[in-house]
Length: 219
Ligand code: PRT
Ligand code: MG
Image 1 (cartoon, rainbow, N blue to C red):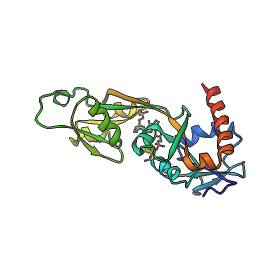
Image 2 (image 1 turned 135 degrees about the vertical axis):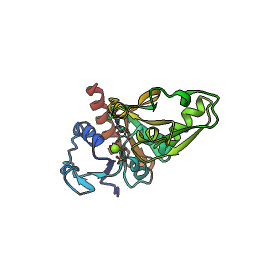
Image 3 (image 1 turned 60 degrees about the vertical axis):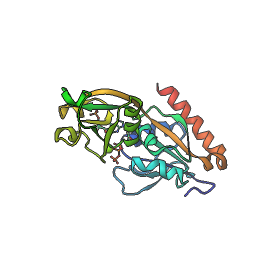
Image 4 (image 1 turned 180 degrees about the horizontal axis):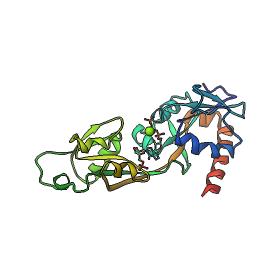
């Protein structure tokens, strides 16, 4: 990917695509296909020098790190888990916003009390963030890695607590769970491959400035 003439931007379909497209429109980049309808993974845009690569949200930093895409749009949650090697993160796009939280049953009872006989179990997709959060509080915990539906874990006794993203709170509520601790605010970031930042600096910088303007006028 990424010849000198082309800029490739990696992003996931769903909320990130929907919320990033109005910002990209400010840079005169419009997708020629709808990723929800098309099976294409590489989309042409109204700018013949720009292509969109549609991938899993958690794969976006990897594509950009290895230069398979020059740029990407990724949630801060995904970037914290990835670690950010090989990437610059020059702009908070302020889209797909939510909070990373610890959640559990409303009366955690023993789950919240010290002096228990075993470590508290935390089920999450966000292993690094969860480890860091509990380490900062000085609590040793057992982290159980899951790939989805974290809300189920406390209900079936897999874990005492979960670390997950919360937007409206409806998913927690529907499963009889409550938010207990705020870990951090999450939004999506523009990320840039470090080599592309040097080799395609003028084009990357033009796009960055257009996006910066679009973000500023969207608040
Ligand atoms: O689905 P897949 O495994 O492919 O990836 P993904 O679930 O990470 O992708 P996607 O498109 O769902 O999310 C992409 C990014 O959007 C995430 O990496 C976050 O940065 C951001 N984002 C913003 C969210 C939410 N809001 C969000 N509410 N990602 C997930 N959720 C989920 C949350 O995990 C929980 O299951 O929505 C549920 C909570 O929502 P409420 O409104 O019920 O509180
Ligand atoms: Mg999802």
